[in-house]
Length: 287
Image (cartoon, rainbow, N blue to C red):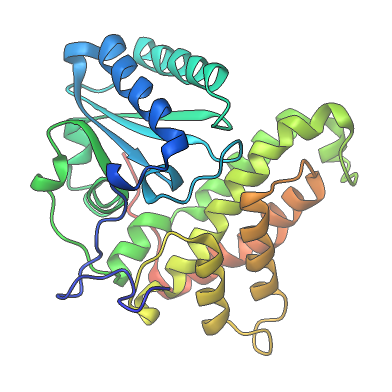
């Protein structure tokens, strides 16, 4: 973690990323995405943001994905989501620099709502880089790495785990229900994105579990795992630090292995969810 722990002089989380940090190889992708977002969404669009490794300057050619957040003036419709999927598919097909594109859609009112103030609002204000339109960070508060932020950003893991099991079972079918090991070749490609997504989520959850104690922020998953390990050492919590470190590796180099996913939803995930609820409580439920 950086010497300043990702905080400004007053102890608030410093916004990460900028268009100036976008690696040269990814600039044509970003330029195309900006133009096509305007073409597709036009007047419906309030603002657009980049997030992830591309605006942080750490993206790897052929390995990193392009992450976009689009804020619409009204709540997104199914037609909007279909347009976003088409946009993602076109960018992924055209640009070999990226390993997929992913566009999140939301509405302006949701970003600024009280319910999302310390989740989606924080995400926009601290982790997103403005690409188009008016920056909603100007209408949001500043954020400290405290228990409130920890609870509202990652305090819903217990609710996510059943959905994760359903997603895995949709790919593996009877093999998952029977507890079989490994995955055949036809499943590996479908399982890899799940391993990457769930690995990232669990590492971030482990980090935000200890975030108020370390009083800092980083988006580097390797650093996140190491910070977690400092507060949950092996001598007191056997296997947990090693599991987070391995998840950080798999977040960058995912394997299509249902054994990994089973360990996430049957072991590491339930433990993290229980420990999170004990330390920070549970995220405020959505209506």
